[in-house]
Image (tube, rainbow, N blue to C red):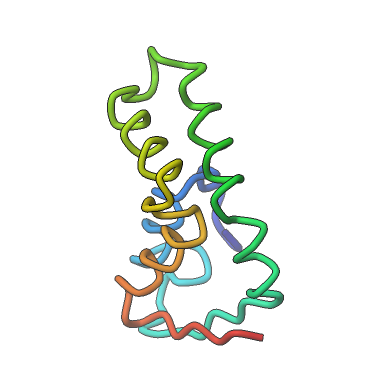
Length: 104
């Protein structure tokens, strides 16, 4: 968020918004390389167990989050079928063709 007087939120919706561009480092860039170091380790770190914990923490705030949706996602993960946090990040990147992911 260089040269911005505000900070982007710390969530995947914000990451998605950032990749659309228009502010921060992507303010006037049509395409960019995203160098992701230690991606293999991060795939493990952001895997099934981390994702389950992520959703369980959201269930602690039912007034903020859609608990029906979250319980569905938890059930999918517990059956070995759901998307991990890493999978979701990769999907976000793939939905932005101007972002060229470089695995380092």
